[in-house]
Length: 283
Ligand code: NAD
Image (tube, rainbow, N blue to C red; front, top):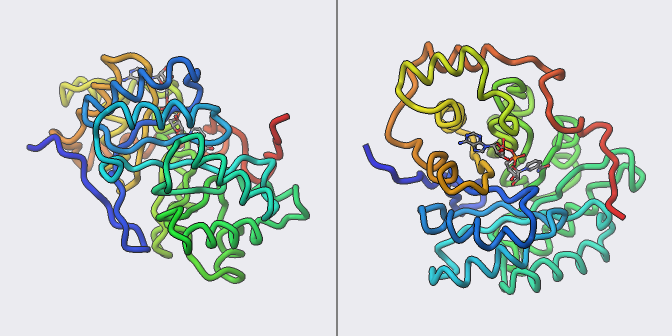
């Protein structure tokens, strides 16, 4: 079986590699080296954000890799303080200049912030539509949007988000939001896919890993890709960056898939904030 990462079609006709590399909480000084390593191993999709403070180092590593710009899928996200259209336009320009790129493959609203900006994330979304129209964002999407937030975009905006990037792992399977996505042609991207490591010593996951002769992280990442979601695990350890990439040469059977899905703890399984309440704006 091949090691190749599948490309998945987005609702706008573009494609995205199903496995990428996430750089949340990687210090700027360590980012270029981690991304360099990931690209060397074969990752062709990098997930960053304005909030992570390491867009410049991601751009640096992509350029240093010698790969053509078109070979690497780069995502970034609008920071929470910039939801007003004029701020979003300025912030988007700062993303492109930090990356030293003339387009991003995917640009997301990082959080809906329903308790901020008078609850208006629709005008923010319409501003992202501008970036797509002028070609500087090949695809646009959202992150941490709940079903009512997606319904509101469907009612008030023209473009359907290409993706919704949400917290998903075996302790928070997030089925309702995923189901809305699959019914409306919005791909789910699963953030914190291994729950920042918290699921890796779960006895059921350890047991499945022993049965298939893989590591717990590989089993959990494989579970995500068999469910059809996009993942971008984060690590700065070369051995783990490589381990997380080797998930396309084995499969989980239905019993193993159901065992992992059965670990869902609902809301109490969250590792991150609840998007209905989260209102953080960085200083
Ligand atoms: P993750 O689930 O990818 O876990 C990362 C942690 O798990 C690492 O710090 C490391 O300690 C450990 N780890 C990684 N590989 C391992 C392995 N093979 N064996 C053992 N331990 C291992 O968590 P994450 O970084 O929060 O999420 C991944 C990416 O998702 C982020 O880098 C970011 O790109 C994205 N993200 C997005 C949002 C959002 O609001 N949109 C929020 C959080 C994360």
